[in-house]
Length: 477
Ligand code: SAH
Ligand code: SF4
Ligand code: F3S
Image (cartoon, rainbow, N blue to C red):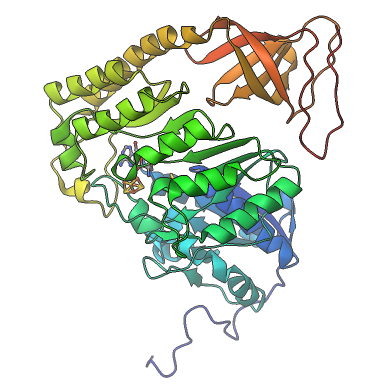
């Protein structure tokens, strides 16, 4: 067959049976908060295009699978899941694989799972309406694989947020840091920031809808640079925190390289900015940090810790760590352990190094056996648990404000979250009625655990009901 007679890939051919797409969809989401929030935007976009979300995949005409590729042979898991979809293809369902594995594997997904119709990475989501139109026209191999070409962000006013009180706003997409172990710069495209004006419009719109808690998102949220040149990141935090009706503002994930002192000053000066900074260090050894291309040293990181430790407010610090990076010696690992004691984190998310496709670290001799990685992970987690057991005890007897999140009927407790992002399980003083989800309540801490706080409401305290949806509530005593 010559190129002239060949049917263009993906266009409907006379042999295709065009079953109309049923405009219902089911979406499954894996990965980080950015992926979770992307799904909220994708859902909003689909609904705007006339699709209705269903909670059972059996009822869906279109099944979307929003994937994560960060660790642990993620792509194999995706292909395994796609195999399970295979049996559904006879029912006329269509499949879209989106997110980080979609970007990473690209058209290989069509080779291994020919029943998939759309493969799109997050940098292409603004083209979703067009992709859906092509799907409805009968095309079968539709790609949105922008890779690192895009300069634009995916802003949409149609976002459907799953929680009516707390919501995300993406302020920066992509990543330009290229840490040696990480897939994100390849899967999410280049770093691109939204203007301060568009972020503030979204924050105000959310406040008008009754949201009180906003989390600003970015792979490196503090690498945000205002394309309009008006605000610094710290000024943006202050501006979002000054939005009438907003009680809490968080931001994640910060990168040590771009962490400036005015961020700590902004938290000190603005009560609505939460007492919590997630600042992943990855390793306590400067030589491992160098091999990881993190572009800072242990001392550089510790200097930023000293800014946070000397703040007027008790700012909780959390981190991510990787153990068993290629070449990590016992002495390097020991430096990670001593760093835990120097910083006294309130939580650490630790991972065994996992070689990932396309990354420089995949070519480095992986000298650390899985047994050693497992053992280092255990030592790290044990040490950190000890630190948290001691460190959380500072909250004993304190009164902390919690946002009510859920009720744990089995344990007779209410679950809330403090400004430091700590879970607070509490009971009510006698005769008090249940405070509504989303309200704020002062809780006296009566017991501390390594991972959460336990407390009791205060007699006569009125939950602050700031959301529009729920009714005012009074604690009786
Ligand atoms: N942008 C953020 C983190 C993004 S990924 C930052 O730079 O800190 C979330 C976490 O996954 C990372 O902090 C890292 O600890 C972990 N991670 C990423 N790639 C990994 C890999 N190949 N193996 C093990 N852990 C990894
Ligand atoms: Fe990955 Fe590094 Fe970018 Fe974080 S900063 S997303 S770890 S490449
Ligand atoms: Fe995973 Fe992509 Fe997030 S790889 S962690 S979903 S950026």
